[in-house]
Length: 486
Image (cartoon, one colour):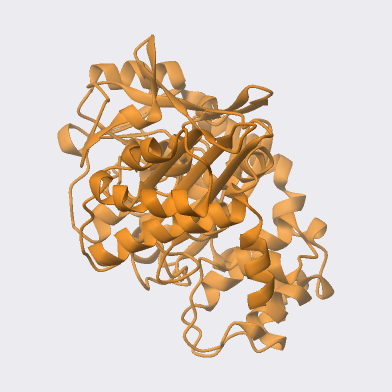
């Protein structure tokens, strides 16, 4: 059975849309069609958080609510979800909601433009963590920017919310089972198809259905989190149809951890993957916190970051160094390739028409290996990398380099290993002299470009310095230097 409407819940209203453009955004629809103007457009690229709303979705049997940026979230991706805007918040007997009252009492708002977005981000945090610490609040607000307050009063508001009410008594908590049942009903209609030609939208019913749809429509655009494709629309006015939306496919959102390694479904978001990634590969914990902001981490997917082939994607360099392998699928057929072989050239990947990334397998590290990842960007939080380097080394019993893998993003047209540098060091003593002798080999591996984020000279010099840093940290000198600087 095929449906012909995008169906979701907006606050407490059932929505059924039969005429939806592939590039129609949630924010535009809320403001222009529904006249819900609490959500604001600040940046139109998912960066400032002024448009933040909550989207509730079923993940297995659980209904979870997450903050997302409405400016780059497409209407077609909302099938079977619950969209909650600031207009839906309410306290008891007509009073302000606890999050709103905390913001008022702590003077967390000045001009007010960004305030609804902050409220919604704090609301999402409060529901899952009623008594958050300062670090939790700062992390939840990474995707919200304010020009007025200096953030301190907003953080105090985040710490104070539970003084004004209990998270367990909030309507979104009390009505959770009823909302989940309504969403299951909306999703029961199978595949959804709307429009024709470039205006066509397809929401497949299952993973197998998605494989069949893409095999029959190899030119269709696959959209999961829209954190990249959304900017094609809002910044470059590109047409993206026909589109297949897959963010709802639970079969692509599995994480399997075992002694051999970690298998991650392509539809797993950064937020979903964070705990498992950090447990399996501790050096990735800090990197994960610096990938975009909370709203983008709630939408963006591991598979999407890989599949689009960006030379500055944050996850490919460390995954390449870890020896990750991709499973690609076309129809019922699957093939596996090394992640580093997937990237062919700028804008070109080893993916055939009708084929898609299904999962990623990342082998476990052995206890005698050193692994590190370093991200450089103009802002520490919520910024695109100017350069990202990943390093992994294993030494033999004589202190010589037995195995070494180095990969960078931002240094070439694709995420790429430094194979000449690796060759210069393998078999050699792991010493400062050996490192210095190998630095010149970077020029053979990379010819970086200059752009708005960094110059070519800066990138090349910094790549060399990161190898020096990795060496110092593996020998314990990096820790001593850190203590001396502190």
